[in-house]
Amino acid sequence: STQYPDLTQATVKGAPITDILADRAWVENDFIPTVAKRGAAIIDARGASSAASAASAAIDHVHDWVLGTSGSWTSSSVMSEGSYGVPEGIISSFPCTSENGEWKIVQGLEIDEFSRAKIDASAAELVEEKNTVASMGLI
Image (cartoon, rainbow, N blue to C red; front, side, top):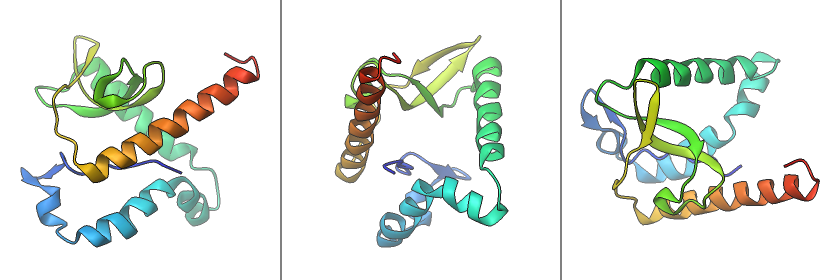
C-alpha cells in the first residue's frame, strides 16, 4: 500500500509533531509502513473486519464537513482538481477547510522531497486503479 501519513503539518498542543518525533528514521521506517498497513493490523488485532475503523473516520469526516473546521483544516478525501500535483479526476486526501457545508482545498502548503515522492507514488497507484476499473467498463 502506498498510503502515506504526511506529518509535516501536524501539531500536538501547538508544537510541530516533527519536533516531537525527532527520530526521522523511525518515522520513515516504522511509523509510516505501520500506518500504510493499518487495515490488516486491525483485522489481525480484532480478528474481524476493520470496517468499524473506517466508519469512525467517515463519521469524523462528515462532522467536519457539515459543522465546519472552525478556522483550522483537516485532511479530507476529495476529487482532485490538480492541487499539489495530484492528477485531476482521482480522489485523494488534501488539506481542506469546511464552512457552511462547503469544502475548499487549502493551497500553498510546503511539501518536502520525501513527502513529494510518497504523494506521487500514492497518486500513481490511484490512477492505475482508476484505469483498471475503467478498462472493466465500470466507470
